[in-house]
Image 1: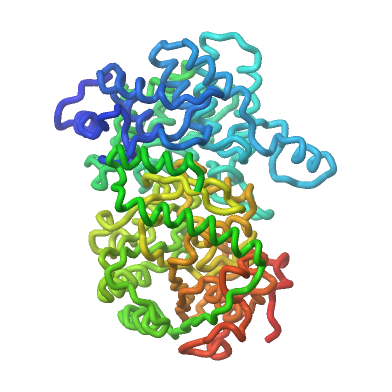
Image 2: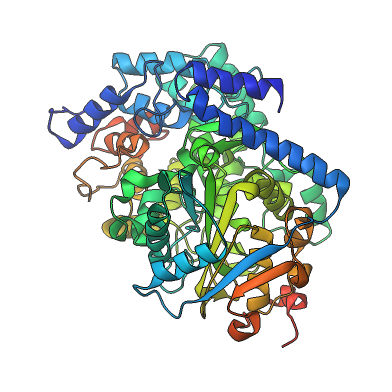
Length: 296
Length: 337
């Protein structure tokens, strides 16, 4: 991790995260709110190696359900996409015990609604469902459609798992997930949140989902030079903080040089998620936890 | 409400995250929704009361907007003194070439009006269906720049703390944001738009924005799998009885709405406490037959849809009717001129 002077871009963010951790070890989306998996996962990655991250991991372990998935929050009985974040963090901590194995198994067994028998049957009789049912990807929650963001995080988790496991189904799901993302690229060069058209009308890409798609496609064999150029153009323009953070992380993971952030100051609304992602994205920063290949 | 849900609420209270006093409306909302859905579905009947809907002409987003909204609210006899009010605009996406969101002038004017009328608290809350970065979207839609102290009075409903509600037959157990559940009155500040899946999106469908993305993802795909009409009805069983609608039809959207349509000036604000009656009135203003819109049909027991059961106050529908273009699939919705 690069040096984090108290008043540096990174230092102010890490200090903010350390100060806003809840007593239970998690983080809310905003300071003082109930702990959720998502901000906790990114804050724990940003603070990796520090005691706060250990406390956070202990809290996260308590959210795993009997089926191996993770819940989005302690009072929420919904198996969720955040399982991928836990599997990634577990990998980064070199913790490969039962929680990791069960989480990984859940990811491998979770499919989108488009790969259901019903949708496959509709495709077989020529009904355009807008998706290729052979491209099994990941939904936000089981039984729903596949979207770019949960698919990208699942791909990161599986690609990290591939580094140490030789299960053939890991490679199969990675190939399907990458195909699903590549298949939904928008005509403008980036990615929308899930599909590139609706009712026959082309949809525009969004900067944050373009960054996330490129995150999921790290280490792919497909030539990504054009979408990466597109992402660099997007980042050079004015984007929101979430989009800027994901574009920065994705471009760095793909070995691209990234200019200084448009947002030197902390988010004025105390947004924990934004703060954690911005901290992760600094040169040499914690984004490397998500690194699945050798592109740097 | 199930024991599990009550137990969860209790746990939240014990953690100090929700006071027992503030839990009362949440528990009440769940109980009311469950009771309401059961009773009305079994009975399968229309309400035995008449509804009032105010139609106020507003040719533009001018400085007189607060006066127009005040006029409509008073016409409907709404009393908000001492109540916690949540303003729920329609903020989904931003495209500078069209008019997707409830105009910032309407939101700002409504905020001032409800404060003037003696609400104990007025907040603004929204959970955009398409975009992750709610605050950036609020910036693009000019909410953040033009509504004073916006960050202090705004809640991102996609990322708010939540409570499970054993709501309705349509939705089953659903997690909803505490900011919306604690409000005594939720004002659906909707935009008058056509919708490529539902026909029209008005005050009732605007409640999709209260469903938290942090659990159900973007674009609230869970609701699409339940079914858009059923989800709209389910959410309105939970919120409809303590809601008020203000629909921004000053400049609406026609064609391939709710995102990719084109601006359509109609020059009206439509308001009322019966959201079904408000939406039915909006449809008639737009030249659409509300009795052919599936979710409005399904919502029948929640309010009034027939013109003879809606008392139109202010302008007459005929005097403000502005036919909105719909995509070919919804051609059957068109009313005769």
